[in-house]
Image (cartoon, rainbow, N blue to C red; front, side, top):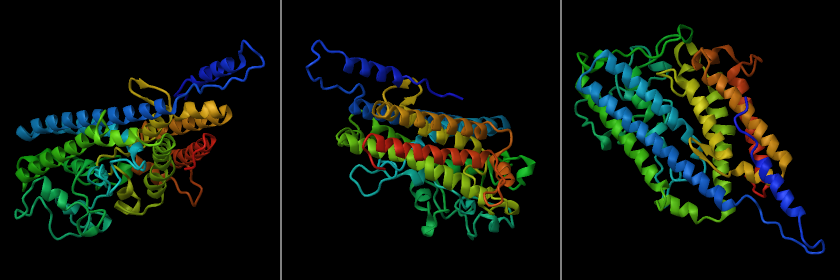
Length: 408
């Protein structure tokens, strides 16, 4: 599967032609680079802004659908809410490539820091801190809390209170906010075996006749508003003349490129391939010790699409493309410096995306696929193949950075 036309070869050929032409064979001509680092940096910043803006708008749409459901809870409204979550999640997944880039989403203690990634996308989730869980499921990752926020009427449900419980008692799995809290409130626990090919089976009556229905609805509304506000902060700071955009635009060019390329390198070669794929394959958490608790979107069984979206975000960064935006990129700089390495980067990216697409479009959910694979026993399937392709791509990203004088 070819995701990108090798347009930079045209630029390279033009450069060679320009360098070869002279009205005076004795005159030395200093070649002018055809790819501007400044333009590459600006294109990346434009993509980051547009990605967050699209994610924000999709979250606003999710909230609108949820509001309709909360006002008049029906099965149809519940189903529509889940579809809206899926749509919004697909867009946000691509923004993960802006992590690890010394940017505002996950850098602490800087004047321009927002550092809200953990509030938006932390996982896995010990869901018993938020709402009821099935009796006996605590040892499978649900948590061992003797209270939950929704049933404890002494806890006021507002943005301040639920965010204060996020990573409660320094437990990173005490997730009370963000995408996965919303996911849990829509799907509930996935208490079925992966072979049953079922997501969580929460019923819409949890918002009508069940205990704490009103507080559950209030929590769902508040936590979604909090996510919207977090995304809006990122939109504003990446907008032209925004707080971080101003900082980023004034970085030394090689520093800016190093930072954003490292983010893509980190997601491909560590966070996605390692933490979200290899770890899940080797995990024994969840129902039947089959690793279900360590898949990213374990309540909705959306992890297949998480893998694709995260990989696509890396592709966006490396090749300078997102939606209608298609500008000069890190890849173009590499091609200009070393066409052979540029081809390796392109090939590795296309292979990784082809493998990620197989996972993303697979008819079997992620939690079932991981039960059929094992690194130690040589049982290789689409998850391991995709993870290895992402690692190979990360290696080519690193080698490509070296080709333009950058050390990741």
